[in-house]
Length: 149
Image 1: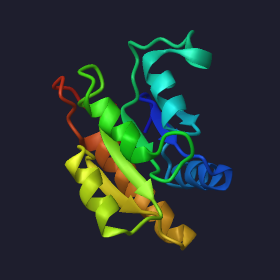
Image 2: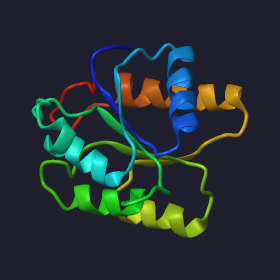
Image 3: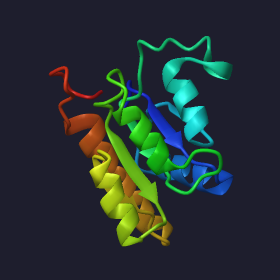
């Protein structure tokens, strides 16, 4: 799987490395950009701050979003992008260790496309990431009518 970018919004460096390793092991070779919290992710999408040279015409095919982060957590980030026309339809998958019912309900209420709890077992995590990649990066048809990748 190549082409479209993935935006991983995750503050835990170990989880970033684990997710990238799982993507590689699942043969998902899409480029992964990382933002460490919701504020940095908004700057990425908008082409602001350290991302001011980024071509904002090229948005990620999917956002993998953690919930519990400093400065701006995942739910506030999701609320913000769903309120902006330009980002409203970006596929956003919650990828978190939280299994709190309120987090699940609020994620979907705010427009998350999917909610995946990070498995503790690495092999299970690789399978979850592989399925996620196949669906969102290969099979899913984006709102503009084309395949996501």
